[in-house]
Length: 195
Image 1 (cartoon, rainbow, N blue to C red):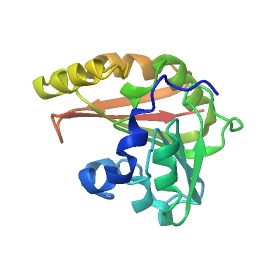
Image 2: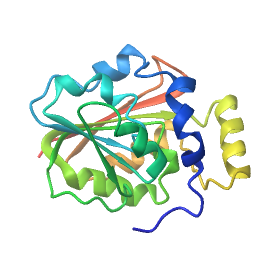
Image 3: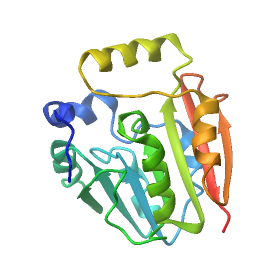
Image 4: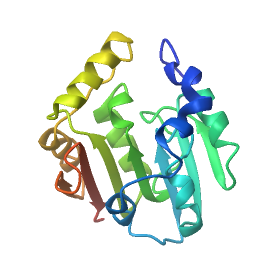
């Protein structure tokens, strides 16, 4: 598996949950997953599993996919999570494996976002739901974060709401809703796979 030149998160992994909070998310994000479900949830770019750990009992199981070994080591210490080292652009799962896919603060880190979107869509079951929570580049604070990540050579690429909608609306059988109403700092995208 090709790895990013530097695993920036390896150094930060032991402190990540302490800085960002374990499972602390806006209620509208978790509600958008429409849980419980009997099938599996994929947390793409899920790092330490800090978000999906809080919903694991409402699913048939949770797989965390991340490119950072350090972050996955932290996820492996949480009960009920299955950490998997992989890129979102090339997932080691069969078609239609997951009933839910969650992407929180990670899409901008994927190196080939459109390829990652297609690959995530491939592993989503027909009738499944993908939920993406991503910083909104239209906000000045996010522009500063983007600049900082660029200076750290993280190769991040942030999108606005309409650009994200366009990426996911282009996928086959996708019904997409995007909002910034609940939290203007973030974009919430929900994509349903209708067939």
